[in-house]
Image 1 (cartoon, rainbow, N blue to C red):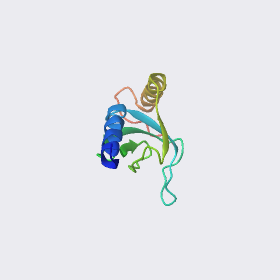
Image 2: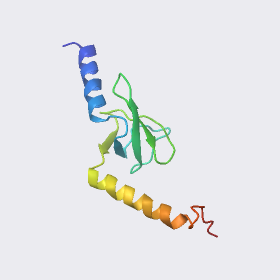
Image 3: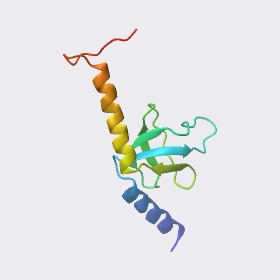
Length: 105
């Protein structure tokens, strides 16, 4: 197997493991100029033909992660459920009975 076949197979396996909608958490990014902070979570938007994963990070960033270069992990179903429960509690607390945003001072 040559280098290109190996890269293609790696990209295919990454695409299968990290499909759009998959939630991930960054452990460490190997980018000295503009890294995404460790601990940031995001939702996979796409995986390119080189295997780079492009998430929409919860902090608004969109920098891709490279398997083998950057360290990240897939969130478990339990962690995703906890996130969803936490966000629904926040949503309920910030909306009044007419579903309008409550302005806190």
